[in-house]
Every structure is written in structure tokens, then in C-alpha cells.
Amino acid sequence: MSKIMNKNIDHHCKRMTSAFSDYLDNRLKKQLCQRLEVHLAECPDCKMYFDTLKMTVTLYRSLEQEPLPEGAEKRLFATIKLARSKNRT
Image (cartoon, rainbow, N blue to C red; front, side, top):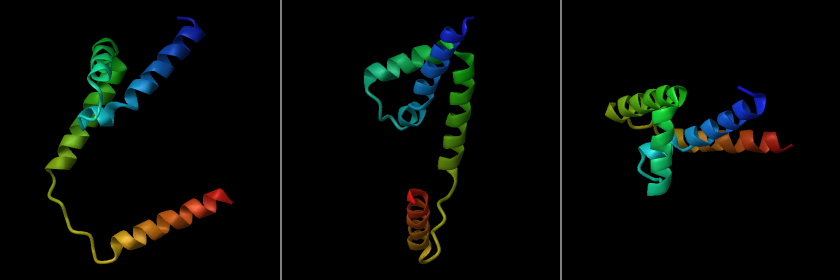
């Protein structure tokens, strides 16, 4: 397979895999769902990646939700804000 063709396939797979989470959350338009399903039927690498992601999401959703310790959310967002400000400089 030529490098150009392989690069196009890689780009197509990256575009498809970026939609997997939205697909699992039923947030994609019907047309894109159909394209993604066709791609999964034809691409064993993406199918394996999708199946793994789907299983991970299913297992995560089956876990009991633990309440966050008091103030944890506030500290988390403060840490994220600090990290973003450091990356901008």
C-alpha cells in the first residue's frame, strides 16, 4: 500500500475514532452513525478499539458513584485553571 493511501486511511480512522464517544452517548446524527458503523464493519483495528472503549464505558457506568469529598471539585477546577494559565505563558 502506498504511503499516501496509508496516510489517508490513518486520517479517516482518526476521524472515526474521534466520534466513538459521541456515538456511544447517542449524540451523533443518523448519517454519521451509519458511516461509522460501515467503517467499523470494514476496519478491524477500529472495531477492536471501539469494542474496548464500549466495554470500558459500560464497566464505568456500572460502578456506584462515590460522592466527592467536600471542596474537591473546587480544588480540581482551581488546579486546572492554574495549569492552563502556566501553559499560556
